[in-house]
Length: 202
Image (cartoon, rainbow, N blue to C red):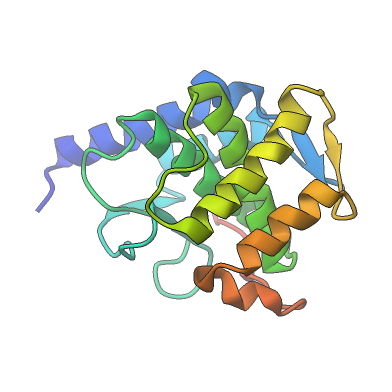
C-alpha cells in the first residue's frame, strides 16, 4: 500500500514530466488538431487538482503506462510502479499518455488511430531529444511504430514543419505500423474512438 508521501512524489514526477524538459518544445498539428506545451501544462494542472487521477498498477505487461478516457478508471493515469517517471523513456511515455488526456479534456472525439498517431508523434519527438533509440529490441512490431514515429519527429524537429496531415507518406507509414500491432487492432475500425468525453474540473 502506497503512503501519501509516495503518491505525492509520484504525482510530482508526472507533473514535472509535463512541465519541464523536452516536452516544452513539442509543437505541431495533425489534421488540424494542435498539440503544444500549453496543453501538457493543462494536464499537469488537472493532475495537481485531482481532476485526473493517478493509480499504480493495472498496467498490461506490454504497455509502458496507460490513460483511461472513460468507463472503469475514467480520467486516470495508470503507471506500473511507484518510481515511475524517474528515467527519460518513462517521461516520454507520460507525454504519450498525456496526449490522450489532452483530447479528453477538450472533448475532441476523433478516430482512435488519429489519437494514437498523435501520441506516437509526441513520443518520437521526446525520443529524439532524449537520444533514445527507436529500435529497442523487445517487440519488433512496436519498434516498427517507434521507427516510423521517429521519421515524423524528424520532420517536426529538423525540418520545422509543424502542420502535418494524414496524406503525408510518413504519417501513412506511422498509422499502418500502429494498426499492424495487435494492441491497436481496434484502430482498424475507421469510426472507433476512445470516447473522449471531458474531464470534470480540468
